[in-house]
Length: 408
Ligand code: GLC
Image 1 (cartoon, rainbow, N blue to C red):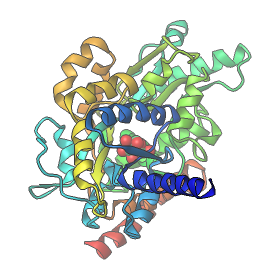
Image 2: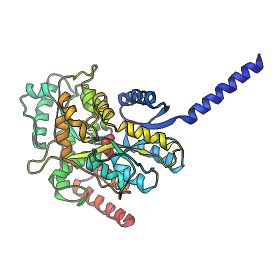
Image 3: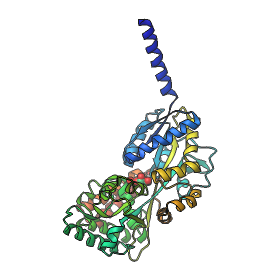
Image 4: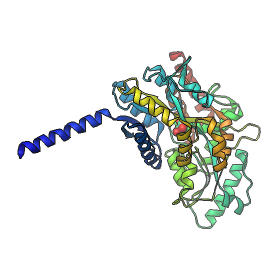
């Protein structure tokens, strides 16, 4: 009897090992609700291809996700076989030699601005899964109640935010704010900054330009002068913090990515059906701008299941699955050829598409993360009211020039 139990245990253990060995591993992160949906999508793939996939959960924050992957890749780990990369760090991963060349995928349907980042010469090292563009979410009901027009300039946004905030506070809602956005010291702050600055002549090229100065002053003023953005904007506000704040009905406007739409309109959301979405405002004398974000699929150079991994990349970027991802998760497809169909069923996608047409890219250079770390440190110090905007931009310019000299 004892030997039978031992045999059984050994068999179970062995089959457990073999199982694990034959699994493909996929690292994904994002909002908790999104990670849940991944399980469903992957189960469908498993049924079609008969390849087992294990999902490795990562946090929502892009910086933490990057660090997590860099650790695995530097130590040449076989897992994860496939991962999602922020468009902001694809270039670094290609240059570090961490990605397997992807062959046999037709790249023509993808947004050119996104797929361009995945290429080195003619060779393709990643494929975009979805494209992100910054959007302005607003409360349709409050817009009417307070007689505000839809703001197309930052100045109009401040005016309306102040009016609604004051009105709501008079009704006893002391924790109500006019505008929530991402000001914490992380990559998202760079995106928010670019969205104010790029349309008015700012950006990475000329860091202490008038456009950048104007943008940064406005961001600081939203927190300290107009006080339409909560005091924790520069300490805590990332995508999920802003989304939850707005979704709880505590803000008039919110800056976020397309994924927030589905969640704001989910069954349990207190603001379901009351939300509108449009282009981010511009300065009176400038143009609209939105930051080009998004996540791309890459196959680790250390993967021992590259063939299976390629099947998963193909599946996830197919027309059918891209439509499914947009329906289930509100992700903005990276393929242009699915939009006609989607706009018919989800009219808000029109605003998303318009905003993507105004999207500006961050520099696609291998040391972008270092550059971003320098800039965000100075931007965040201004938001904390610790340093004047002009001085912060000048210091950022000097430090980034040093980086350029070191790496170029
Ligand atoms: C989103 C974008 C990504 C960006 C990040 C910033 O995940 O897709 O490109 O870097 O937000 O927080």
